[in-house]
Length: 606
Image (tube, rainbow, N blue to C red; front, side):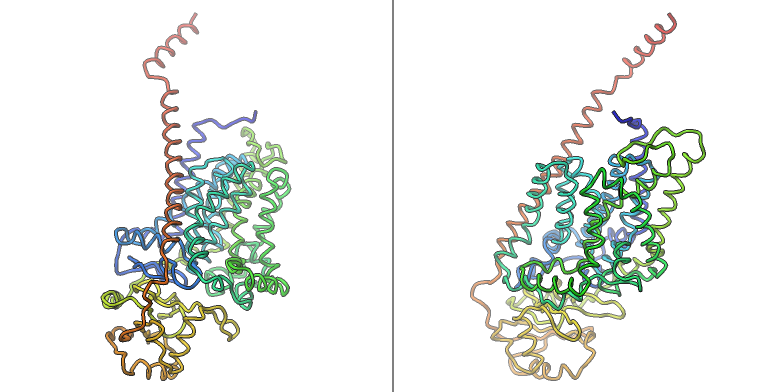
C-alpha cells in the first residue's frame, strides 16, 4: 500500500488550495466579482457577450426562431430567472463558481491522481485560469465556453473518482452552451475508470443536451443546422507569429479572431507558451504509461486544430459543415485545444516531482517520499514550481489589465422605452438595421442588443462575410432585409411589425436611401427617435394565425436539465452529510479520551 499523507496535512493542503483559488479568481476575473453587485443600468457587453440586467422571453433568448439554437440553455436560463434575479448576477456567479471548481479540482488532480506536493497543486490551480485560451474566449465574448474550459479539471477528477453528484452538476454547468457540453463529455469519457462510468456520463450528457437538442430536432429548419463551406477558413486556427498555428495551439491559443487576442500577448509570450509546453511534454512518457487515454487526448487537442487549418483540412471541414447537420459546432477548431488542460495539469505534477531526487521516477501516481535534509530535495521542486508559475503568468503578462473590457458598461435608456412600446402591440417580427447582428459603439464591437432586449421576434440574419462574400444566414430574414435595402416593401406580408434603425452603426448613409423611402411610405410611421435610434411601426402586418414557434421542446428539455442538476446536488449534499456524520461518530468523546490518556499513562508508569 502506498504511503498516504497525514489527514491534517491533507486538510491543510485543501484549505490552502481553496484559498489560493479564491485569490486567483479575484486577480484574473475581477470584472465578474464586480458583477455580483446588481446595477440595472449596466450590462456585460463585448463581441458575442451581451448579458443585461433582465432578458425578455423573445424568440432568440428561448431559441425558438428559425435558426439553430446556439445559445441554449444559456440565454433561456438567464431569461427565466432574470425577472427576480439579475442576469448579470447569475452570469457572474456561474463564471466564479466554475473558476473555483476548476482550480480546486485541478489541485485535487495533482494531489490524488499524481501524488504531487502543495507547490505543484498551486501551479496547476493557477494554470487553469491563467492561460491564453480562457482570456481569449472571454475577450471574444464566449464566456460560457471559457467557463467550460475552466471546469474541465473538475469534470476529469470527478469522473475518475466516481463522484457522480458533483460530476452531473459540472456537466450541466459546462452544458450552458453546446460546445461546453461536448468538451465535458469527451473529458468524462476519457477519465472514467470503467465502461459503466462512461455510460453514466454519456446518459447524463444527453439529458443535459436536451434544452438545445430537442428544439434543434423539432423546431429548427434542418437546413439551418448546416453552414456554408466558406466559413471553415474563417474559423480555422490562426498562427500568431511566423511559427504558425502549431506554436499557438501548443500554448492553448490561436483563436481565429486576432482582435480577441489579449494586448499583452506578444511574440515573447508565444515563445514562452511553446517552451512551457515542451517542458511539460518531457514528462509525457510517465503520463502515457499511467493515463494513456489522457496522453492521447492531450496530443490530439494540440495538433488537430493546426492540421485542420491546412488547405486539405479546411476543405475537409468545409465539406463536413456543409453536408452534416450540426457539424458547424466544430468549425471553430481552436475551442477544442482546452481539452489539453487536464493533461497539462497532470504534467505539471510530473515536472515538479521529477526534480525531487528522493522520488522514484517513472510513475505519475507515486506519492512523494519523505523530505530529507538535503538542500536539493527541499528546494529543487519548489524552484521548478515557481518557474512553471512564472511561465504561466508570462503567457499573458498583463492578464488582469487585459480583462478590463469585460467590465460592465452603461446601456442606453432608450431600450426600456422601446421595450414598453413594442410590448403594447401585437408581437410580429422586428427588423434590425443596418443588416447584420453586430454593432460598434466607440471601439467596442458587440452583438446587437436588440436581439436580446426587445420582446417578440427580433430577426437575426445570422450571416457572415468571408473575403467579401456573404455566407451562412437565414434565407427568410436575409430576403426581407434585401427587399428593404433595395426599396421593395414586403414588410407587411412577411409579418414584420417593427423596424429599428441604429444610426450610430451606419457608416454609409447613402446605402440607407432606398430603405428610408420604404420606411417613410404609407402604412409605416416613426414612433420613437432617441439616442440615434429610430423605431418604425408597420400598420396591420399579416401575422400567422397560430404561432410557428413551439416552446414545448425547450421546456421539456429544460425540465430534464434541471432534474439532472438538482439530482446531482442532492447526491453530493447527501454524501457530504454522511461523511460529516461518520467523522462525528468516529471522533472520541473528550471524557473518554481523557480516561484513555490517563490509563495509558498508568500503564506506561507500571
